[in-house]
Length: 205
Image (cartoon, rainbow, N blue to C red):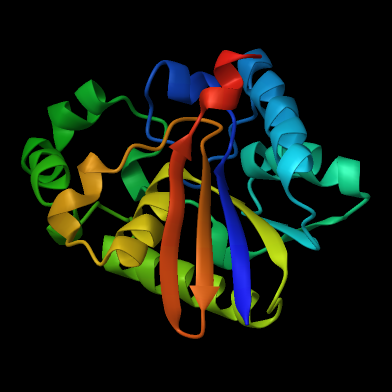
């Protein structure tokens, strides 16, 4: 049995707009992000009939997920496996501010992210382990159905890398805009990518 996974990145926050490391800091959606969430709900309702909506517990994802779940009368189910990477001491800082204190680590993060030890933070391999476990577990519980997963740019990227069997070196090549919709199929243990970083629906908004 095949499970359809509609993987969504949350709408925009002010920390996306000005580029601060967000991680576990609970940054709310801004006005543009709220509009993106509503548009994502309309886009998904036009094509799919999901039986469940799961989300990172952080409010920027939960509010996005609630807008998607509303047309179907579904309650959003928070899932810890979908929470954003823990950026530790970088959270709330801009890249320039991080560079002032940890220039070598930041360079490594942009050059070889899997080997970057963010101070007080989470290794990318750990993010991937929990995110893929969440995807597999949720897909197994909804065989033959379509479900929505709302998460964050780093989490979505590692899931997409796994679906494409791509190495960590391709992490920064995975486009994932705010409000992006990705569609994957889980068949047994195999994860297949159908569509990736779809934001066309936002251009018509």
